[in-house]
Amino acid sequence: MTSFESDYNNGAHPIVLQHLIETNNAQSASYGFDQWSEQAKDKIRQACDCPDADIFFLPGGTQTNATVIDSVLASYEGVIAVETAHINVHESGAVEAYGHKVITLPSHDGKMDANELNQYLQAFHADPTCDHMVFPGMVYITFPTELGTLYQAEDIEQIHTICQHFDIPLFIDGARLGYGLMSFDCDFDLPWLAHHCDVFYIGGTKVGALCGEAVVFPRGNAPRHFFNIVKRHGALLAKGRLVGVQFDALFTDDLYFHIARQAIDKALQLRQLFIKANVPIKDSPTNQQFVTLTNSQMQQLLSHVLFETWEPIDDTHTLCRFVTSWATTDDDMAQLSQALDALNN
Image (cartoon, rainbow, N blue to C red):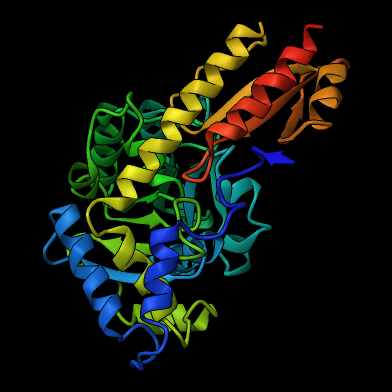
């Protein structure tokens, strides 16, 4: 059955898989000190226009978020995020498990409002009892957001400026970074992003890799002994080449960006199918599309295609998520079209 449940329900992109096969019999150093990991780091530095960047490969997104946040924050500090942030909702308290509170601000379609961030930080530092509170030591945003929305360059610039004013780092979760950058509504590129934050990661798991994320400290500003911190978090692969080889392929001939654009193209096709079927759909320029289905429509569609039931809207309607990826095919779209046609018959 065709699945639109997520962008990581396939294996690896064929070119990535082929590179893994081609390098399989070659021996190498362990823990990421192999030739392919080094090649991948150089290619990422070039793509980011950050020649001095510190780059580390980790297995998955939750480990990456928890490890980066723990490495940057002092024991008494927390991280500011919106209520819908992945670290607040869908990571089983991984950040809190290492002793750091997630300090939440209101979510505006998944995004953080710069004015609200500034007001919070000003109020915190003006409070005479702030020494008794969790100190805000980092700001975390996702691009794209968990709700398929995008920050514009002006939004990120404002948040980054506020972080600089209060001397706290900005961390951008890029689990779906490729899909955000390749959206037709995105008004900046990877080098711009790299120069407007203190740390970010390039998601591989959801953009063509079997697994793996690339953490980038763009100015060579990785915390001391970050390698040790990764190991302490259980996020250091003995066969570090597993991720390095994949990113070596993804950042050769712009493969990462090409396959992300393919997913955006399919998402736009999917969007038109729902519009044609008169199904209400939220405004999302990324590979995540959110539609409102009656519960009967939802059950009928689930007998033909798979997707995620996001949250109930009322007693008779449910918000559902459909996700495209680098692996979404024309046949997948045809099956969805047929299933939507059946809703109107």
